[in-house]
Length: 112
Image (cartoon, rainbow, N blue to C red; front, side, top):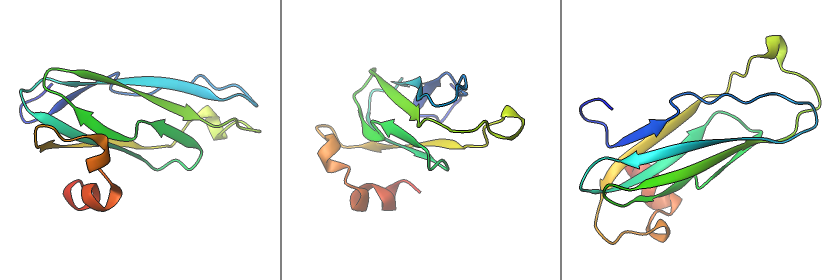
């Protein structure tokens, strides 16, 4: 973790072991190393995956597991390389905030 980061991401890079006609999942652990409540949002350029939870609140000194699942593919990607981008944005929020407080219209202006 570098100075100024609100959360630690582990692993820092996702690797999906490709198999035809099979869903593939990877987990990310997000850790709040601060004494603040941190809202996060996971975004991707991929149209063939689902992320759960894609937004939530990390309590002080807590960890959250995020599951990224790629939908089954009928053909291999060119050169077996995945070009999908994943970005995790975070912001300090108020104590007592819940996932319900993170509606898209609320979070989007804050996390760009």
